[in-house]
Length: 160
Image (cartoon, rainbow, N blue to C red; front, side, top):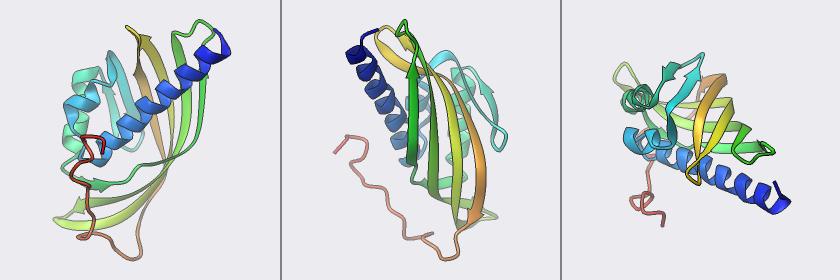
């Protein structure tokens, strides 16, 4: 694989991850998120459970949207390594995420710090998730609150 091909693959994978986070931040739409995974893809986390196969991954996102009603995924420190054959890759990311969770009917402002370990595959010229492992370093309440004042840009889906 040439350096140019490797760089292009890394950028495409970064766009995949950024699209994933953008979708999470606009309310976790299950079908668009599921479409980022191969059919037998896996999303797993000691804090949130293991979901195997695109249908289970979609159900996870459908369910999480009822408790996490606002999220701002802030990705940090991406490290992406593309296989020599250019058909697979793995990546590691850190994330800092302010979010609002419904707990006992109340909106609660919180922070998560975590890390992702991911596997990607190239399918028909498109990079997709094969596996996402998410580990939560901490999930802590925010001392102030943004609950009730958070907003999602209405045109976020259109990419504007």
